[in-house]
Every structure is written in C-alpha cells, then in structure tokens.
View 1 (cartoon, one colour):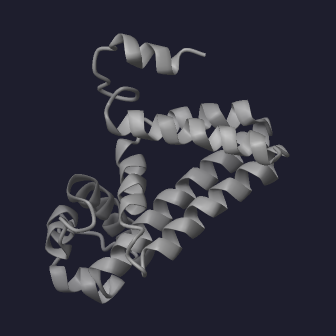
View 2 (cartoon, rainbow, N blue to C red):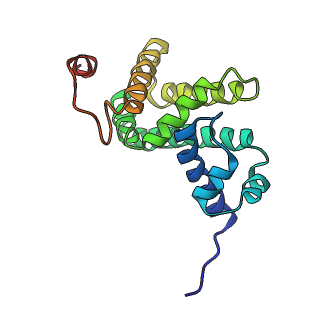
Length: 177
C-alpha cells in the first residue's frame, strides 16, 4: 500500500493535535518535545525543525486552542449573535477536554515572561470576540467569561463534559441556573 505524504499544513495540524494531548497530560513543565513527537509518530528533531523550541510549540498549541474557541463562537454567532448561542457553542467545546485543559495549563504558566503575553492576548481576543459578535457590554462579557472559566475548571475536573463523574450536591448547585 502506498503511503501518502501529508502536506506541510496537515503535518503542522498533526503536531498541534499531538501537542494538545501531551501538554494536557503533562502541562508545560512536564512535557517534552520527544513526547509530542512519539504521539505524532515523527522524530523529535522534526518537531524542533517545525516549531523551534518546546516553548514555541506550547505557545502555538495555546494559540490554536484559543483560535478554535473563536472560530466556534463565530460560527455560532453567524446563526444567532447572542451570548446564549455562544454559551451553547462553548458547551459543545467542553467535550474537547484537551482543548480546555491546555488553556488552563497556559494560564498557570503565564508567570513565564515569554508565555504570559501570548496567553493574555489569547484570552483578550476571546473577550473582544464575545463583545464584537454579541454586542455585549463589559459587565455582560465579564459574566459570560466568568461562567466560561467556571465551566472550564469543572470540565477539567470532569464535573461536566464527556466521562463526567457522578454529580455531588455542590456540583448541581453550581450548575443549576
């Protein structure tokens, strides 16, 4: 059987997916480019050739996660430009546990002077996107993002999303509207 070669864009996406998996498991400090390479089925020098350093790979992975959220919000707003529509879209994204968990790792690594500005820019883009797409004022956008962060944390703890643990009373209280 002939093997088809991936395009540069496909290979880049493959490595970002592998990095999502690796960084979700080990965080920034606990993940190596070798682990990413093994998940992707490529050599570690190839990962370095494409991304330069582990830090650049991590930043690209966090940026990828943020852009996926922005893209999903834009699709939702094209159908209905409301906070409720974007909220439903984010509920769908919670099923992609790696996506939200890598963002949490980005937030916790933000004290690093090279990582912090990129992560803050990512979060700021999401905030501005929410306001732009829905016309939400500052307080509405703040409340929306606060609920999103709560859901992100609960998703990372498997309180919501796929393979959610059985609900305890406190979980139900937090999630009931």
